[in-house]
Image (cartoon, rainbow, N blue to C red; front, side, top):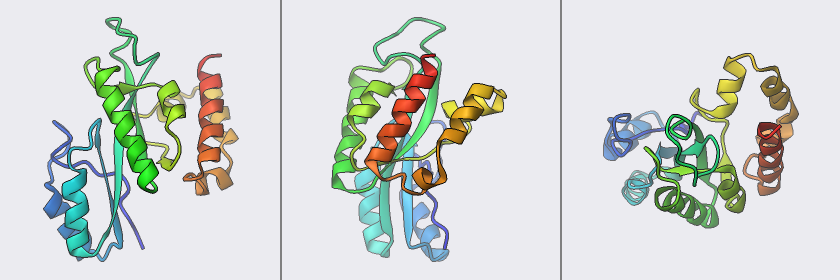
Length: 186
């Protein structure tokens, strides 16, 4: 059984193309029991996605691919703070869904600089009910490893397989974020 956990729809401006009904229909054709939506920096399609999945008897997984500020979400210095990283977050339950809404709202109201951005402080405040995926190649960890950053490679070894399997466990996510933040500020 395979489930797509990282999908962009037409709500991911300049990135996604597929409309939600078409996405859910295709998942149904492939007999997928569940499907996630993870648009860039927004959750505009969450309600439509949920309703469409309900019609097709597919478990909807609501998520978002947030932009993480290189420094703080409040920093807005040209050529420094326009750099950002991707991080994919999924709601495990209603608490997680509400936390994703809070993250996206604060990203737009407090962290907007070219894109809506969160920071590690904000992420730590909203881990309950949230599953954090390692992300795409635009993620900070992926970029460290691509650049053969040995410290980044060491960090990737610190994340034990049991923590990856239990990534919905908020204690495991909090521990990982704490280690990752300490690593970034060395």
